[in-house]
Length: 502
Image (cartoon, rainbow, N blue to C red; front, side, top):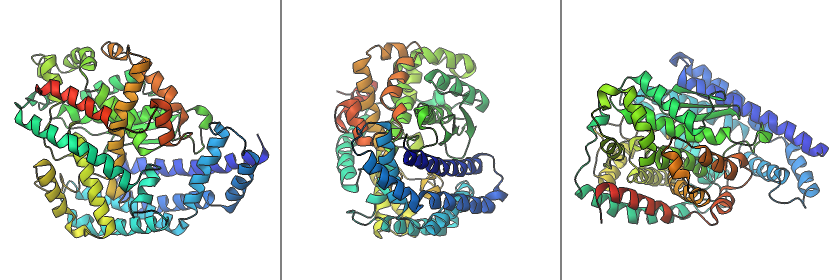
C-alpha cells in the first residue's frame, strides 16, 4: 500500500467513525431517548455532523485523491483500491459543494423535526409540524442548488440516494408500472374479496417479536452482530459491519405489522452484515444505492416471506405460537389473507400490487413541492386528492394521511421514496437470476432453508458494498439493465392465481 493510500484510508476511517457516532445518536433518539432530550440531541447531532463534514472536505483529501488517481491510473476498475478511490472522489466532490454550516443546521433541524413528528402523528396534528416541514422544504431546495447542471430540481437529491437515476428515468419506469398495475387492481377489485379476519385477532406482542426473530435468524440475520428494538417507524441502521440494528413496531390486533416489518428490516440488515469485512470503516462499507438496498428488504419480506413455499414450513410453527387464534385456520386461508389486495391508506401495510401506487403518489408530491407548484399548507388536501383518485380511499385524518411516513420529517424532501419501487423491481430481477443458478432455492424455502439464497446474494451483492455503482452491479448480476417486466410478470402470475384471473 502506498503512503498516500494509507493516509487516505486513515482520514476516511475518521469520517466514517463520526458518521457512525451520529447514527448511534439517531438510533437512540428513535428508540430509548426520553422526549426531554430532543433539543440537546439536535445540538449533539449538529456538532458531530459538522465535524465529520469538515474532515471529509479537508483539502488534503482532495490532494490525496489527485495523487492516487495518477498513481493508480492503470489499476483494473474492479479492484478494491480503484473502487475506494472512485467512491471517495464521488463523496468528496459532493461534500465539498455543501457548506459545513448548512450540514450542521440541517442535521439539527432534522432531529427537531423528527421529535415534532413523533408527537404530532399520534395527536393527528399536521399544523404542529407544518412550519418544520416548510423549513425542510427550504433546506431541500437549498441542498439541490449546491449541484447545478441537472435537468430537474429533484435530480441531485435523487442522485444522492440512487446514483444515475433522474426524474425522467423514474417517470418512465413508474409509467410502465402504472399502465400494468392499475388494470390489475381493477381486475382484482372485481373478484371475490379475500377474508383476512384471521389476521385481525389479538396476538400478544412479545410472542409476535419472538416468532419474527426466529425467522430472521433462519434467513441469516446475525444477532451476535445485531439487535431488534421497537420504534415509531421501522428502520435499519449500521454502526459497523459488526453492529447492524433493526427496529419494528407492533399492533396486537394485526399479526402482519411486526412480522413483515421485521422481515423487511432484516433484509436491510443482512445486506449490511454481508459486506466484506476488509471494507470496515471505509466508504465502501455501505449499500450501493437505496434501490438495491430496498431490493433486499422487499425480497426477504415479499418474494420469500409472503410465498406459499415459505409458509408451508413456517405456518405450523406460527400455529404452535398462537394456537387459539390459528389452529382452526387453514394454510390456504392464511396464505390468501397475508396476500390480500386492498386499496389501503398506509404504505407500509400495502399489498404487493398496490404498494407502488403509494410510492408514486409521494414521488409526484415531492416534485410539486420542490417545483413550487404545491404549498406545504396545501399538502394534506393534495395528499387526500391523490389517494382518492389513485386508490379510491381517503384518510379520516392526517395521522394516517400525510403524517404516516417519517421520511420528510427526519430527512429531506426529494429522493426519499423512489428506492422502494426500484427495490421492488430489482427484488424479482435478482431472485430470477438466483433461481437460474440454483433452481433448488424454492424447494429449500419450503424446508425452512435459506443458506443457498443467502450465499448467492452475499456473493453477488452484499460483499461488494459500494464497490460497484448500482447500475454496474445490476448488469454484473443479472446480465442487463433494470427491467420492470420480470416484476410485472411475477405480480400477474402470483395474484392471477390467488384471485382466479384469466
